[in-house]
Each structure stands twice: as structure tokens, then as C-alpha cells.
Image (tube, rainbow, N blue to C red; front, side, top):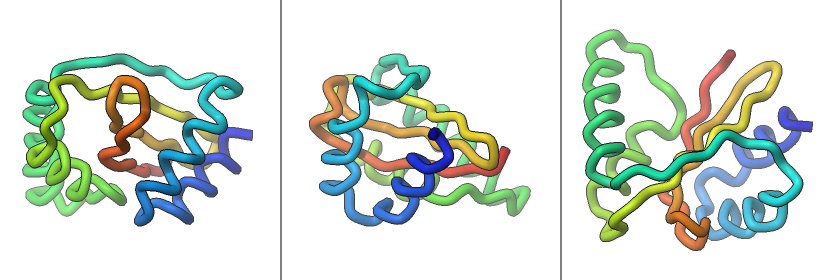
Length: 109
């Protein structure tokens, strides 16, 4: 089930309004690890990882976009939710209530 959800999210990843709608439909029926941190803390971590990715040429789909949106966001806190699949996983960055989606990072398992 998680792999289909990840594939669905991947297909709409460039349309954050559709991602938001999709997440709001499935969030109560899906087991995903989730926690809230300050936006600045998550930005610092993922910006450092982006710098490392640029150095090692190890890129993940959506990483740069998420970092840019976190930098420009006025959110105080960001929810980071992870969906693990068999083939790949994704990390969703959003407002605490999923009303704003900053982006999704996809990575192979």
C-alpha cells in the first residue's frame, strides 16, 4: 500500500495543492512517522545535507525544492512525515496540520 501512495505522490510532486489534498485524504489511514521541529532547525539540517549532496553528487528528488521553500517559508514549525515503502520512501515537509505542503523528498531504499 505504501509503495502505491509514494508512486501517487511522485506523480503529483510538482503540484503542491494536489499533494496537500492527497495527504489530507490519506493521513488518517496511513501509518507514517511524523514529528514537528522548528523550521529553522530542519532548514539547517537539510541545507547542510543539500551541500553534502552537491559535493558527493548524491541527489534526491525534491531535496533542493524543499530546502528553498523552507528558507522562504514563514512557518514557525514544520512537520516532517516519512512514508516507508519497499522500493522507495519519501519525506513530506508541511505545516503542523498539513494545510501547507513545502515539498516532498523521494529516495530509493
